[in-house]
Length: 128
Image (cartoon, rainbow, N blue to C red; front, side):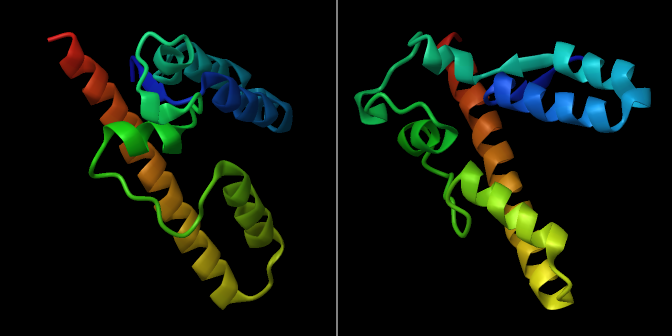
């Protein structure tokens, strides 16, 4: 991949840094991933594009809610909640609970990915 599209490079790079500490033999590959990131968040954070509906909140959910009609979050409502679900997933011994948590986390990640790419396409269409 030549470009990896993200929303909030700082958060993603922080997660990669944790992986580097845990798997130092993968440092080069993980650093390459950080180098390839294109951060959609910067456009909104720098106010290169602003919508009054943002109300000075630039989270992926707030921005996508204003600009993308087709994105709907259900279940997990925030990144903090997703981290809590992941912690519960890791420590749970109950296979039914684990499957439920896994399903919720995958749906949340899918929606985040769809929103990030939707915002990239929205911005690309502005400059056409």
